[in-house]
Length: 427
Image (cartoon, rainbow, N blue to C red):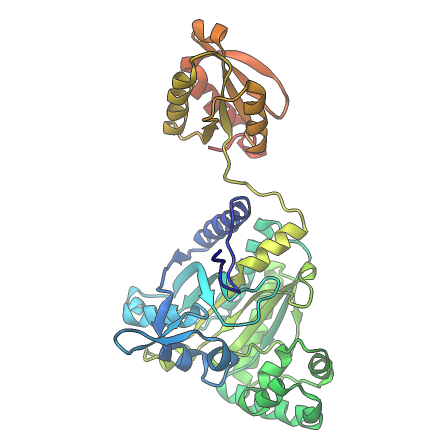
């Protein structure tokens, strides 16, 4: 038997309902904030990520899927979306539309990591990018949007952690200071972090090994921002305070990718264990220029969809599943063709509906209706059908009544209008 590759996972019916809920909620809230969807290819020139993410990062050195195609081009499966979106922004001259380009995306990413809970080798992200403004108001908007997305989903017990890396000069000074602080502990670091010490010392703060984590927690980290960056960060915090967004300033939130500057943030969630980061983001003011565009500031964030799904399961979040809300059952001899026509009429009227195709007993049909989560069942019986009627049963209350066949659709639409807030009927 051929099985799915290690680190990949089938999202089966039932679980995919939760994913659709996450994605549809994201689309709704992102549109409210003025973000429009962008879809980029999952394969790109490998050099895009090497230049954008940094050739010394773990992603580029260890995790990226790179291969030569039939034209001998070096191609990579995208390990993240930001570099691809910046490439699209430059290539399609999106700066000419004026103002910040506000974009959102969802889709698969690929990294050859050790599979674990909430992270696969093919994993999914949903996020936003705002390209074209250095305003601290935009930083605050992006963070507030991430928080509002979580609130809309119903995720609880999350925490926003905030920091500023400053400009490139500030960042280089901070890296030198981090090396100085980690140097006395060098021999106790894991082999991976020993390599990171020279290549990308910021990544040591992300190590989940017990020894390295304790060292990182106890290493003293001080903010050292220039006046402009300090003023920018102060305004970001003031904006968040005005919006009532709760956060903690944590100078060890550093984001290991090379392109981050100024404001960076993470959102963690208590139910996810050691891998508790559910969202990460921040500014990348140098990336557009680094990839061949004009000097253009930008900011954004990405949520891991797998981790969002785990967080929602942990809090038993109620979500709208895509399941039949009306079930057509048959209790009379020879009425299946009529039931099939009624089913088609319901669907044509925009009412999600289903029936049993195997002509089983009414009792079996009712069990299937319950299993599918139907809110209502239309029962076609011989006696009722002779009078041009059917029985409409409310599955939540058990109430049922006879109704004219030609009035079923209007009756269901009336119920939908009056009860949609409670989710009794959703077409």
